Image 1 (cartoon, rainbow, N blue to C red):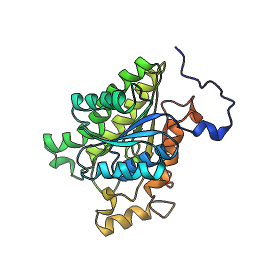
Image 2 (cartoon, helix red, strand yellow):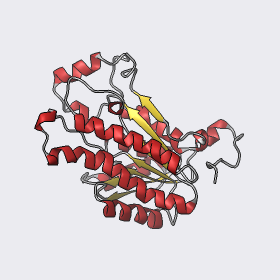
Image 3 (tube, one colour):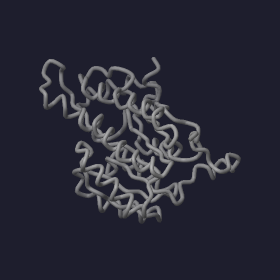
Image 4 (spheres, rainbow, N blue to C red):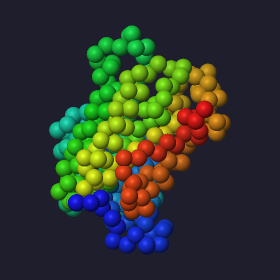
Length: 267
């Protein structure tokens, strides 16, 4: 089967960005980048399931986004590092929330550990990989089975500029390697699943999230000095890119990686 093509590729361009009637799920969707992705998909018309692990305010967050956008938004607790857990959650969302359908899944959950390489233990090394790489794999596998059955689906991974360069001055080899692995996983799946799903990545640069703002001031200022844009990105500036990838506006796009970093990776 060839890559899915919308019924009318000549439809007015803005209509191609609409997600009205679509069912979406976002891991790590209760805060930071994930929350803005949820908001963007909802604003474009999709009903969105927030998948979270520890965010106690996730149900309230879901209710607030639903009130703001007028679509259904619901929170589901799960653990992306446990294959059976995330599979059960994706299936539950499909059957209950999606009434038997799932159109868009965003694998956004991520963690970052700063540690010199020589100090890693089996546990600290595995921590980032379990979430950033294994978690993406298990989320993709669960979603892919549904997409294959439907004959159509859309999977988006939040990677990082760390997948293509080595951040300095912090030491975070597990994060960098896990994000690079997730990026290549996306490319591999894009080829393997080409007859029933599109898979793309977004690689953000420095974002004004807790992962960044909790760092020492001198480190924050050093990062800022390396960004040609001379400012840190608000997570809300990413949501339109996710809507683009989730929509029919890029129906021939698969295996791509969109870097959004204010020029950080260019010098």
